[in-house]
Image (cartoon, rainbow, N blue to C red):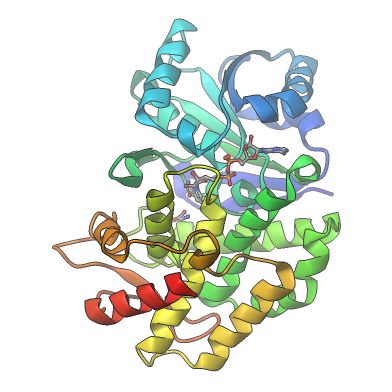
Length: 368
Ligand code: NAD
Ligand code: GLY
């Protein structure tokens, strides 16, 4: 049976439906949410090849007509150029204010489509159909949309909540193992932030889940979505506690920016490394016991999560990485906000970071 969760945001609240083979019933789920029986689907070439026909067939069963815009896969598509191209192509289709966009794909498609929906005709509705583990546990929920700039990741964007999130776990069967693992990093993040019980559950079940156990996968997605929905409901626009969801991201975004948003380092891989860097910085600052970092590292080893930037390249430029921090969105009044940790499930937000200590940690972590 599909699980139905609610993101409690008043008039902007919505359901997240998680289950198997949902795509073939998508028309049924989507129909109550749309104002005209015509939608525009945005997807990428890879996802479209696997799943577009399944979605369009399911929509047709409910007499919903659809047009599709297919973009290139990969992080490079979250660019200003691709965004302007998408908007022009959408306008070519003569949308009106009742048009609903459907994002069929991973986080790249969700972020790009959501951002387009937020500005097209000053805002139209959109629905998320996430097809990667990362997008099912994280990016499809919470309404953060956006694209990258040459100055950094997700620096251009908006908050625009979807009408519905339809997470079909069955679609993960075609996801390459590397992408699955990258999504697993954002799953582990919820344990690291504030749920030690979930981390223990992942220690027990993570390897089996990654080996393809769909029941465990569904359970992890539901637990993650519940955690994210609670944080988003409490702090939709990241005035305070939502920043915890960025655990490891300031470090990770700097690594991603340095590698040029390509195949060298996937977003989830950068987050995986970034979370270990946050643990290492916390240990170096004397606020987190070494044993907690060791426990995190043991789980990385057991599940093959990447922990070391040094495995990607040996010659990281520490000055460049520090420079990326200064462009981070979480900077306010010149002060950098970091998410550090006192141990597993004990992440906290602080502006009290010693830049020299940070630099030393970065140099050590990148050399490891
Ligand atoms: P992605 O969208 O690039 O998808 C990864 C790859 O998998 C792509 O090549 C895609 O074509 C392919 N793919 C997708 N679904 C597939 C399937 N079912 N079978 C086979 N191949 C499939 O990457 P992602 O990891 O899903 O998302 C990363 C993006 O999400 C980053 O840009 C990141 O910044 C963003 N993000 C956003 C939020 C948010 O709150 N908005 C949160 C976390 C991450
Ligand atoms: N992934 C960070 C957030 O949604 O806030």
